[in-house]
Length: 341
Image (cartoon, rainbow, N blue to C red; front, side, top):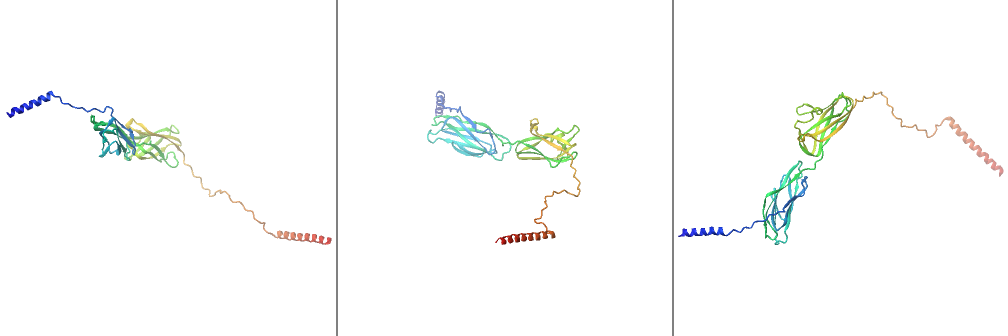
């Protein structure tokens, strides 16, 4: 009897499920949703903001923004209560006023770390859930497939510079110590580069030029004939780059030379990274003049005239006669005046 009752109840339930359709409410989609980044390229120390525009007013949402913590650090957010776990910032919002303060967007700001010296392509990955309109009368589909926005974190690179240093006079057939410097205060990173030297000018067809460097195997390498570095090249780049290459310059004859030096990128069909020409003058050594033992010194002293003439015997007599003459003239005029009186 009980078994028959159970079978009857099951049959009624099955019939009810067949005859009465289940009412389901399907959430709408945010068709006008857009995600933007304030910068496509970010330099170390600069900020970038990820903005999620909903396309309509929302009274509730949760926005997750995943980021690379090797490149970025979280700074601030706008549009909800934030939670940063080190690799993801979660921004949660619920309009507690009952729909009078909905939001149309949410913003999260990051800063690129200061110690970055290389180019780093990365992205922000955004997902959303718990979406509803201002009065919660309509819900929207969660966005579980991340929306990715690409960003390049890269320093503001400074062009490389080539400098060829030496001291004194370059003499023919005498090896001259030189230093070739490749430098930049913030050099772009290259994995495989080489230095190439070319002769642009020599004083004659018979003249020869060499720029000799010593490699790690103690072998002499002529930059003009072979270039510098392994066939695959060597790496360069970073902050305050200064690579010095010691050279021996050898020039066969006196005259003017021009050497053209290039730094090339082996990974980009030997494209030129930086190039520069150096004009060099080769001259015979000046012979020192023999020392004759005498020097012509300028006579800057002037002969001083005596302030008074030296006194001699004749000079004393002149003075005595002058005194007698003055006395005689005085006596004459006094006698005349007395006779008149």
